[in-house]
Length: 240
Image (cartoon, rainbow, N blue to C red; front, side, top):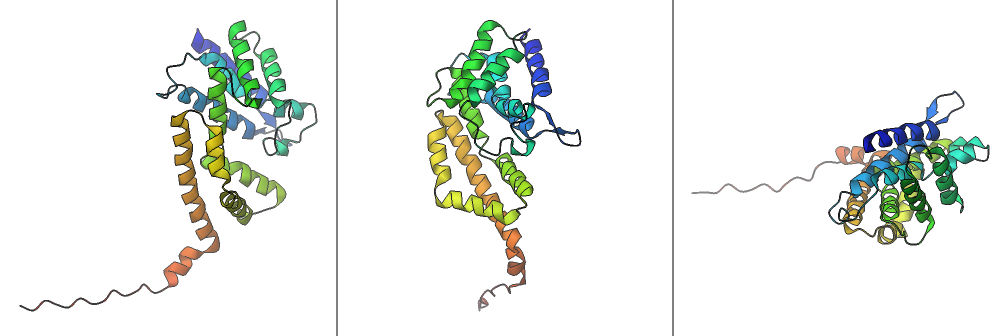
């Protein structure tokens, strides 16, 4: 029965969260983010330092998929341009509106108890400290999506829309690193030690990739290939 409910949630969310481009094709930007958060929330719930908590998995799935629904609501009402979705800070009322819309859309799918827990988890995103375990997991899953390679896509998407290029992505990354943004973000965003370690690991990998991106963008690998390799000093043959 739980599996059938979760399938129904996935189907409803996909129908609700995909928005159309001017050509009528689906824009999957918001949907892919929602899917990653939902999948990662379920996986975080199974980590050793989280698994001891009793989690309503159905409520967690619904909350994770619909947590950014305010963008779709704004788009449908003509207040939000499709190209601005997820590329600017959400309004103050975002979580409350997303929770209320989710409750309406899934009223016939979830039990009243799971519906309340899902709505509470979404509203917890705007709180300093989430009260429910579903809210804590959702918060960490949503924050974790800012780390790792998929987090580069919003910067690339923004650059394409604004006519900027690779250098703008590199410069933004460098500024955040210089101001120690990422270290502070890790400290403030994660309460579960295992998720914090995952964020730190992802961050280190992205740092290596960004360094390589800058090398390739500037052609430094070509410069290195054109430079003569330093000769090793000849070793004298041993005489018997």
